[in-house]
Length: 243
Image (cartoon, rainbow, N blue to C red; front, side):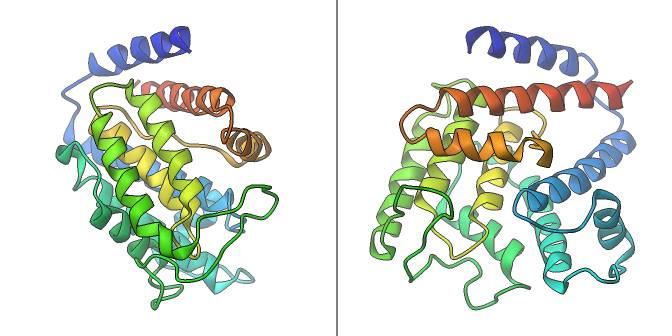
């Protein structure tokens, strides 16, 4: 992992050489990843909208014929949660209120009653052999999660910290739905707060993503490597956009 982190740090230095970046270009890049992250994160969970259809929904407000209304709501909600990340960059921490807000923004059009609220029912992850925490344990587990991540902010490499936050949040699974998307938003919030660009996990690696996340209960090396590679690939894409 050290060599992979070294590659990431080298790419980050190249990105930093372009700063300060023209405000107009920053706006365009942010919009580019708004669509890209919304599409990819939703697609990982089975959303049927293509990237171009996601762009039409978000930029033009047009519904796509033959596609479920829920898929449209997921795109709109995720984009709103993505926009919210940029208001949190200077905070250098995560909080329970931020976690709940991200979920509420994403989920409110889908299920207003459960949006931004920890689940009150038992849940399972399809295909996983590991049981999820009981609803009564979630508040304490989330508090411990937040305290742990904040305590590691200056002790871990940002990419490692982002991956830790992602996997441990998913293992708690505090909401009735949308946990994977909130986990990826938290991961990207941590990257942004450390001066990195967001990382996109494309649907093409979905099987590997699910497998390494499942194995991460006992050995997270594969998941860490996957996330680090996704950061690296997104950095290369960012440099391409910068010319």
